[in-house]
Length: 330
Image 1 (cartoon, rainbow, N blue to C red):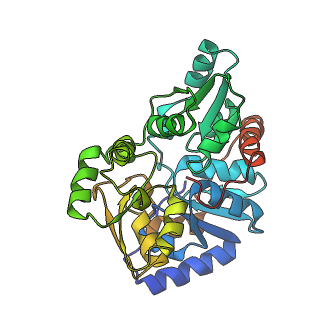
Image 2 (image 1 turned 45 degrees about the vertical axis):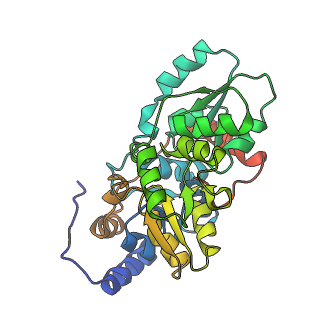
């Protein structure tokens, strides 16, 4: 039975050296999502959003993929790299958004809308991707929906806020699943208004999963937010935008872990969370001790049965075929 060995606290230098030694011995590439703890981000071979990281993993020569993120992300890596061993350091690291719809629920929803095209955000399980027609990221969801012929019924899942943003942007009618990320939903309009009042000159980086997105767009329409400084962005695009910020400041509406990457991308700028309580407990489950344990013991392996993998892969490939998603996926 695999047991977690929680070592005494190490210095970062000692931790990094041990990670490098163990990763080399296991022939592993270490991937970390933008919302991970700072030490995990710093020690990883690659940091980014889930889809970009999975594509990096698939193109690497490493035999083992260690995905410091949540379960659906490790599944996506396995979908794209079936010949690799995929490890998730914290086996209980789930996702409230991915868990908001099951494959059985999707099958029932499809039965109520025969002939509809199902667009699934990548923040879904492999089983849900397998029941979908095409996947999307937050940065290409508009493009994916626009690729579907006019007049076609579209089921969009699972994020209500992202779906609403896409419907507004495209002018298309979407049937939208009522799912949400509990962290992003908690970044509410009140928090946004208060922070904007405190920092009137700041640029706004807003993730489209946030509960404040609709309010931001409404305030933009009324001229109460600066058009040129209000940006609806995926996590990867936030890092890109940070590099262009110069010595300015930005209010960040997403999980607070991204601020570490933003500060690394532009140490001269100032970044503040719209809601400092926007912390995903699942993302923070991958601790330095758990990463070391994962590399020592090969735990915990994530698998996807081949029939499910092939159907899910088809949904991802259809997305890529209409326009390669950038490194700024989710």
